[in-house]
Image (cartoon, rainbow, N blue to C red):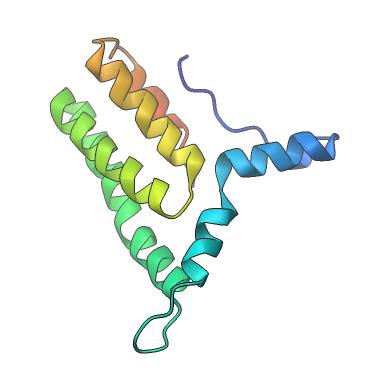
Length: 125
């Protein structure tokens, strides 16, 4: 399988390895950089970005499921690209990397099972 599910951080005994995995999943420095930006109305930009992401990401994943079921790989690639961009913006490296792998697989015609593997990572999440 091209994309492997994320292993549990609780199963890791080496603290540095666990820290590396957290960075692979979430780059907190990106979120911290938004904290330095002040909004005009005093609202928390980081919270707003996360809220927007959480509103759109499940829909994008469902759109990928639907397009993959219809074997519309151009649509899968486009939606994955959109999800990659929004994930990168808020530092969700794991999701962004999974989307990049999906885009690459489609671009190189290695599509058999790749959308299923991608979606497997996001089941129950």
